Image (cartoon, rainbow, N blue to C red):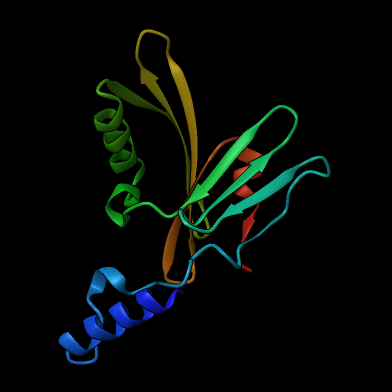
Amino acid sequence: MSARTSVLALILAAACEGKPPERFVQHAPVLAALRLRVPVDAVTAYEVVLDRWYIATPSDLAIVDVPPAAALASPDALRHVLEVERRTTASIESRESLSDGYATTIVVHAAASERVTVVVRQLGNRWVRCIGPLQLCKSLKRG
């Protein structure tokens, strides 16, 4: 942190009675300690800024992130979010209960139908979403 940034942070803290404004509070990444069982040929990368894992194999890609909790409440809530994000309709093709969440495959109806497989699991007090191949996403484990 530069001297100028440090001074600005101190001024902001003083102006806020010793507490920095909420937008300046850095929260610990939720997924930094996540442990995954991945195929031997998989490559993993963690993106600190977005608190997101990327898991790539020669044929697949999975993304693990922490979206708003309301989007993960149920497969139906997840379907609705996909419909809004992509401005189209979607239907649930399959659902599976897991001990700590659920897995679902959603068909997004657009010019070309797309199947989106999502596994939602609870890690501690946070819910995480994995978009990608079912078996890879089901291997999520707490670190």
